[in-house]
Image 1 (cartoon, rainbow, N blue to C red):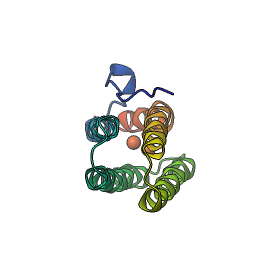
Image 2 (cartoon, rainbow, N blue to C red; image 1 turned 120 degrees about the horizontal axis):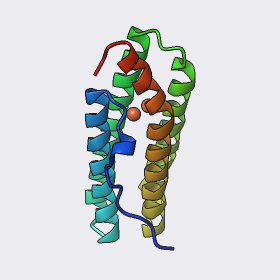
Image 3 (tube, rainbow, N blue to C red; image 1 turned 30 degrees about the vertical axis):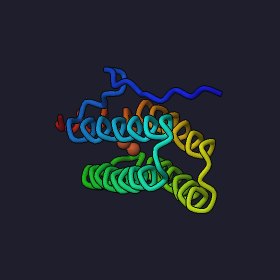
Amino acid sequence: MASHAIITWNASLSCGVTDIDEDHKKLVSMINRLGGAVLSADPQEVLQEILRELVQYVVFHFDREEEYMQEYDYPRFEQHQAQHRQLLDQAQEFVELLGSRPTQELWQQLGDTLRAWLVVHIEGEDHELGAFLVNQGLS
Ligand SMILES: [Fe+2]
Ligand SMILES: [Fe+2]
């Protein structure tokens, strides 16, 4: 099954808050980089290193959003944080599986999961958060 290796950044992904949008652009580019490396069957060490950096940046980014939510007393904090935790749990499962059984198929599955999740999460919870923060005067 062919997978879409690339997410193209477009206006529908923008949340209206610069810090958050910049993080999302960076995440999109990291996921695209991973997708490209998987497609060209780069060595496992290279893939593992990109994945490690990606997970690290995801943790950093989720913290940033959660700090905004707490600072501005965001009413959907718990639902939003729950989605973040779910993604991190899922990513952790992939990290463990890829550590012991690094197949091309599993790498592709990881890429597909990350891409689908990112777009759904940004267009859902992150947009709601962005609209709320813009309303609070952030940009
Ligand atoms: Fe989020
Ligand atoms: Fe986000």
